[in-house]
Length: 150
Image 1 (cartoon, rainbow, N blue to C red):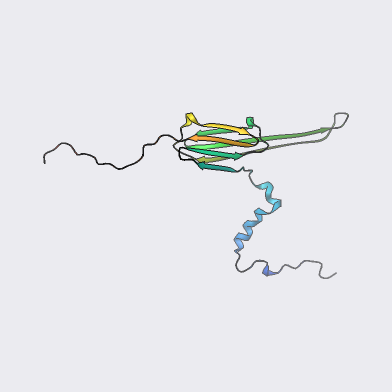
Image 2 (cartoon, helix red, strand yellow):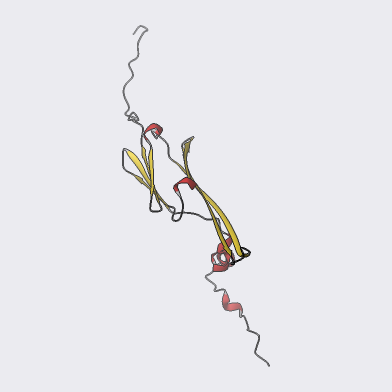
């Protein structure tokens, strides 16, 4: 019966690997996935005169997504509620499960013409068009001094 207990050698941590990094990598393990906050992928593109943002929100309904621009922050929030009710022939519950998840992302984007911003949602993709405000270009100029004697 000897040798049934696995032996862990001290060489499991190589000299080149930081012990702290190895400890933090435990959160990347599959069994830890449930503890992470849900997130969604977002791309922001600067087109010169506007920003175009696309967010991947598969499985969401348009009604469950909110989009707000306040104090130069664009915030996308989504909430997903699912229910799975199964009953037998008599109407008794055999299984009843519910799950709720919510997620949000915020981006600092200034110089936006809020009145011209548009958004659409189709096939799990949120598309947001944010025109920039017409900002005066900062080009130095000479200021004339008036008054006083030479």
